[in-house]
Every structure is written in C-alpha cells, then in structure tokens.
Amino acid sequence: MCLRNIGGHREERPTFLWQTFPSKKVSSDICPSIRFVGNEKDISGRNDERASAWHKFVNGLSLLLNSALPTDKKIKGIWANHPLFLTLQRTPIFPLPLTLFMDKRQEGKAKKCNFSMIRIHPSWHQRLKSEFEAPYFQELSAFVRTEYASTRCFPPASKVFAAFDHCPFDEVKVVILGQDPYHEPGQAEGLCFSVPDGVAKPPSLLNIFKEIESDLGTPSPESGSLLRWADQGVLLLNATLTVRAHRAGSHQGRGWELFTDAAVRRLAEEREGLVFILWGSYAQKKGAFIDTSRHLVLKSAHPSPLSAYRGFFGNHHFSRANAYLCQNGKSPIVW
Image (cartoon, rainbow, N blue to C red; front, side):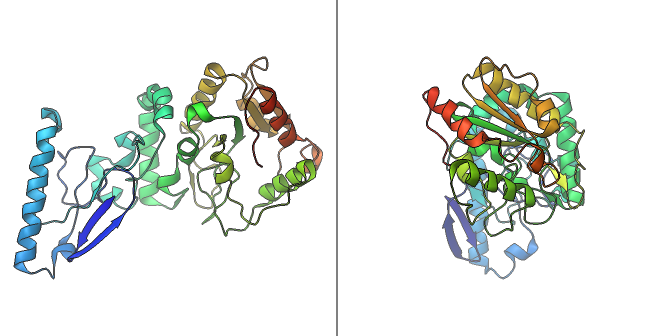
C-alpha cells in the first residue's frame, strides 16, 4: 500500500515500488534504490507540532532503513524538513536498472520524467540481466533519460516495459513483433499495435481486427487495447521501446534493437512450441534466426493500409496460431 501523509490527510492506495519523487535537494550520496523528496511548499502550512512529528518520523525511518542496509548503501543527506513519500512493494516486480531511473548528476532534469514506477517481471530480468549490464544498455539508458527529461516521449515512462511486465517469460505463447511505439499523444501503452481504452484505433489495428473477424468470426471490439492478449500470453513487442513525440523512428539505432533481439532470442532458444507472428519485412528480418522446427513462424505483409491487401488480409494467422497451440497442449488465445 502507498501511505501518503500530506497536510494531515492520510491516503492509502496500492502501488508497486519503493518510490519517492526527485528533488533538487536530494543528496547525491542517497541510497540508489530509495528516493527522498519534497519542497518548501510541502511543509508550509503545517503547525510546529505536526512538523516536529513529521521530522521525527523521517529521521526514525532513515535510521531503521540504514540498519538494514549494507555499509556502502547507507542513506545519507536525509532532509528532515522535507516530507517522505514511501511506497511499499505490493508485488515482486523487479525495478529496472537504476541508471534508467535517475542520473545523480542530473537530478534536477530527471524530475521532469517519472521513472519511479517502471516495472519488469522478475522472469524477464533473470533472462536479460546480462543485457541490462552491457555497455550499450548503459548508453541507451542515458539517452532515454535525456530524451524524457528534455522533450515529450512515448509511451509514458511507467509503460516502457509493459510488454515484459504483462507477459512473464514462462507464460509466453505467441510473439507479435512490431517496430516503433505510436508517436502521437495518448496512443502508446507499451504494447505493439495497442492503444488505451477510449483512443481511436489506428489504421493497422483496424485491419488486424478486420482479419480476426474474417478468420474467426469475432466482431471487432470497442476498445483498441490489447492488454487482454498480453495477459493471455501474447508478447506484443516493438523492436524499439520508446519514441519522441511526432517523430516516428526517432529512437531507432540507439540500442533498443539489440535489447529486443536478445529477448526474442531467449524465447526462441529456451522455449519450444511458440508462435512467432512476423508482419512485414522488418519483423521478418528480426525473426530470421528462429528455428522453424521448434516453433511456428507465421509471415505475411504488414497490416498497414499500404500493404494489407498485398497478403495480410486472408493470412488466417489467428486461427493457425490457435490450432498450433492446441496441438502443443496449450490453451488457445481469445483474440
């Protein structure tokens, strides 16, 4: 539960990580997995008795945390006159490499983007740990931080790894590869081809639903969100996980492709009986190494209006995927 005490008001709500929000006054020596914040406005208006009690709470908590931390991770520079927002971890979701959250040398800039609730399932962190530690990923992290701090980017920072969070490694049944997140406001939600509830369906997604209706007889849903697919084991993975607003492909060639290649390779090599759906030449090139003797690889034209009539419509990928899953003892996807 998230416990927030602001001006005497107590609010409880579920959330996910140890979390606070950055401040210019946070010490650069602060424990890297916990962030303390506040500003003068947060403390103003409180009477002396309440402020004193708050100071004691913050100091007491810092002592408690320090007692449980190794020497090299002690919390330093606690600003007792600033409120602490503490979020207890609700589920065992692994917080991404801290270099992606916050550059201690750029804390003032980092406060413009909230990476404090980025999540990735532990099963994926285990498989991709070597990627997180690789030099290219450190460079990628610095680039992403700078982009999110200086300009508008998509998807929201908390949803950058949504595909991995909603679809644990051992539960993946189908992989659909995309290219870039949507680059217009309100569209991207971290899953390829998917848009949040209430957002107009982009042309490619409309064509996907048309093919599903033709293939399976399932009417097009009102919502364009594909979270329901992800929660059934469909990994909806873009090759590039972030993009600058209004600039398609603006984050290509920065390292995301290496990272997502590694994810696809782990699945192809460590799992069997998966369905890989590759629409368009870009996805087909990315999945060229997949062993077709171990997995079903479905290829066709991209669902974009520019190519849908050149092989996407009528590909029957959804019924073929379900038939293969059933043959391999897996439950079909409710498309």
